Image (cartoon, rainbow, N blue to C red; front, top):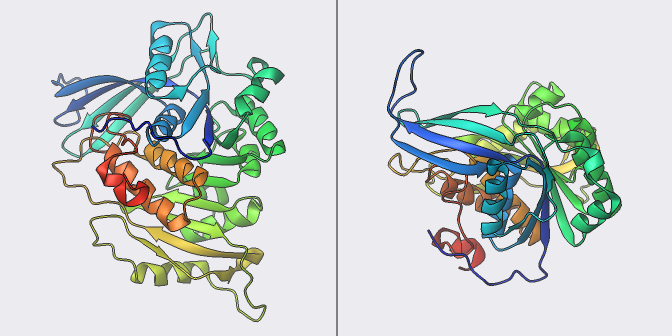
Length: 365
């Protein structure tokens, strides 16, 4: 693993994440056990987890200032999680510590036979609530922030913070994994959204994935782009564009655009490739372009664990937004970072540092 670079990013952009922290107990097994069976694990690791903590660890390793607003219990697990984040360069000074309660934890079973992972989440208490966010805390934690990241797990507190961020013209990226109470209000404030494979169609009830992405841009006029992650198949992005197209240009069917784009995408490439459509007029008075990005093909001998790959992808997106990467570069960069994560056990073990040779093409390391 490469050591962390001390080189500062010009302008010192800050990423703020608000959400839950948890402790992951990870065990690898030769195959997934059947009920009432005893099985011997092949490796074991205890590591901090949670979408927000994982993504911010990625951001910090890539060289940006990152800070987290979360709540942990005053127990050994809570203290351990904060210390681990601090050791990775994440500012935890704004976190809230409950005098009682218990911290979140997660059992993760990694099946070496199928390269899958099964998560058993045990929620802790008490949750992060709006009453925990004093006016002075909110003003301090938002100071100097370029992008706010949230995912709706601490919905009321996240919404309050997002509303304040919106009033200060701070960009907001929402990670939408599944329908959650209060997530709609967060999406209304979002500048960017990164979604799980199933979320766009679940949320919009559209018949196809491309039409679901378009429906999201129509329903969320503030949204600049929406990304749908596809695991080993890469990702797809629909980006809203301000480029004017001739009024005489007919609307392009989003599904037909997707099919034509797939036909010209090199899905055989080992490294991620990006293929973009031209800017075109779409339904709902949206002008935009569709982008397909393939995933890196990881040899089976190197593929260890996919836990946290989506969080690594999101962390790289946050980096790209803060450093004004072009969309195509940002997406291929994020795919490479996610692939690095899959080469070790747990969400943070092999998250790359800024000077990782695998990222040299993007960061000049």
